[in-house]
Image 1 (cartoon, rainbow, N blue to C red):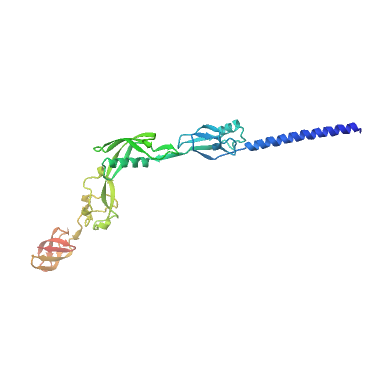
Image 2 (image 1 turned 90 degrees about the vertical axis):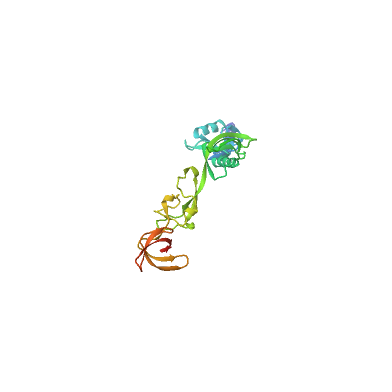
Amino acid sequence: MSKDFFDFMRIALSIAVFIFGVTFGSVVLVASANAALAASLRSEAIITGDYIKLGDIFEGVENADNVQGPAPQPGKDMILNARTLYKIASALDIEWSPATSAQQIILRREAAVIPQSDIIATLEDRLRKEGVDEKFTVRLTTAPESVVLPAETPATMDITAFNFDPQRDSFNAVMVAPSGENPVKRISVSGSIERMVAVPVLKNSLKNGDIISALDIDWIDLPKNRIVAGTVMSEADLVNMSPRRMASAGKPINVNDLERPKMVDRGDSVTLIFDNGTMVLTTKGKALQAGAIGDSIRVANIDSNKSLQGVVTAHREVTIR
C-alpha cells in the first residue's frame, strides 16, 4: 500500500478518536447533570411557614427554597398525588417519577391547637369569678372542637365579653386567642352549667339485714337538678340503717329503701330488763313480735308466761319500764 493510504487512515483514525472522545465526554457531562438533579420524594412534610417549598416535597434537589405555592391552613393537611408530583418534577427538570400511581405526599401545616377542654377551663374560671362557688360542670351548646392557631402563637385564650344568667344557669361569651391584645382567632360560645351535689352511696352492695356503717359509705357528685325527691343526702341518714332489699353499690339510695335493722325477730329468745328507775332486774323472755331499736314490741316472760310490752334497746334485748 502507498504511503498516502497510510497517512489517510492515520488521519481518519485520529478524527474518529476525537469524535468518540467528544461524544463520550458529552454523555458523561449529561449523566452527571442528571445525577445532580435526581431526587427522592419525602414520605411526609411538616410545613412551618406560609408557603410550600420544593425542599418540603423532594430531598436532594437544588433550589430547595423554591416556593411552590401557599401552605395549608394551620393544623390542616394537603395531599399531593402522583400526577401532581410528576408535573412538578417535569416542570423543574427533576429526575423523578412515581413508583406507582398511588404514590403521594402529605403536607401538614404545623399549628398550635387549643382543645375544647382548655376552652371549658377558661369558662370555668370566669364562672367562679361570677360567683358560682358550688361544684359544677359546663355544658357547651355552641363551641368549636378546638381552636387552631399558627405554630408560633401561644395556645391561650381570653374572654372579651361574658353574660351569665344565674336563674337559668346559662351563659354566652366571646373568646379570643391568643389574647385580647392579639386576637388572631375570635369565637362565640354558649352553654349552661350543671350544679353538682355530693351524694352518699354504698361502696359495696348490701342486702337486707346488713347494717350500714361509716366505712361502707362513698360519695359521688350528681347534678343538683337530677336528684329525685327522697334521696338520702347525709351520712347520718345511712349509718346504722339496713336496706329493705338489695342495695347496689355506687347508686343513690332513697329513704324508702332503708329500715332500721331488726334487733329482735319473732320467736327469738330475748333478755328482759325490768327498770323502774331505782332497781334493774333481768330475766329470760320470748319475742312475740319483731322489732328494731326503739320499737315497742310484745314479749312473754318465760317464768310467768305473762305477756308484756317493752322497747327494743339492743340485739335480743327488750327493756320493760
